[in-house]
Structures are given as structure tokens and as C-alpha cells.
Image (tube, rainbow, N blue to C red):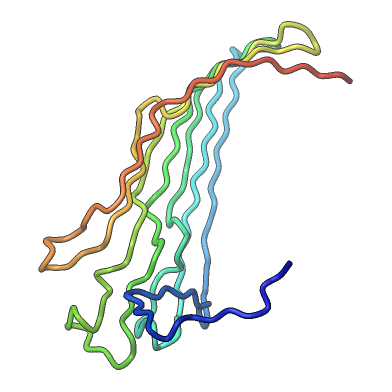
Length: 193
């Protein structure tokens, strides 16, 4: 069966309607840097960082000025330090991600930029920056069998989302906090070939 007709009753009152629109134009550019060093004694250092800049133009009914592209972190990076040989590997990994613009408050072309009622740039929603630390070890029991242990988010970082806010709100307004805690995984890998 399929829906052949959809009707909204005439007496219904909608208090909020959300829509998704594509932007008119966006420019993204960036650079990724990486440095890896492996020492003869088995110690190693691996790192990378990515810097991204963007500028997006939206329909003037949504936003009158340009802004950064939603869903993109300006800086991401990780550093891994550890030791390994032919059978054993251990590493500590630190990951960083800068804030991400998730939702856009409207400030249409006909709005006064200083008027918080008609220009809602204060309603932009961000996912906060985060730094996590992980630990991983692996031991090759045989050529085909290995055992591993992963400890993820050892620093127990929370995932925060906030509304940009303005002078009347006193700045950012926390609107969502998710705590996942640390995750531990012990497992076996077996290769059949």
C-alpha cells in the first residue's frame, strides 16, 4: 500500500515549521600536515593536523551575511605515541576537534542585524570542541591470531551542544550534554587466509 493523498486539517495550528535549504555557494580550502617518526628501539610518534577555512552564502531569506560552512570543524588533529615490535603494539592516542556549526539561526536580508527578534544569529547551534584520549594494545599470538584491548575516551569527555546566545542571554546557552563515559573492548582477531 502507498499514500496517494496527504491532507493537513484546516483547523490545525503549527507552532514551528523546520525546513532544510541548500546554500547558494560555498568555498572550502585547507591544509593537512602530518609527521611520523619510527625509532629503531620500537618507539614511534604519529601525528596529523588539518586546518580548514570555509565561507558559505545562503539564500538571503535565511542569512544576510556569509558564514562558515555548517558541519565542518576548522581544526582536527591527533597524536599517537607508542611502542611496537613484530608481535606487540601499544599506543596512546589524543584526538582533537574544534567546534562545529550544526544549525543556523535566521537573519534574512530584510532584518536589522542589531535586532535580536528579527535577526537570530544568536540562535546558531554549535557542537563544542572536544579532546579525547584513547589507549590501544595488540598482541599477535600466532601469525593468524591476535588479541587486542582498546580503551576509548579515557578522559570521559562529554559531547556538548550550545546555542550561540547574545548579550541578553549572557553568551552561550548549553542545550544538550551527552556523556558516553569510557568504553573498553577486549577481542580476538583471526585471519583465515
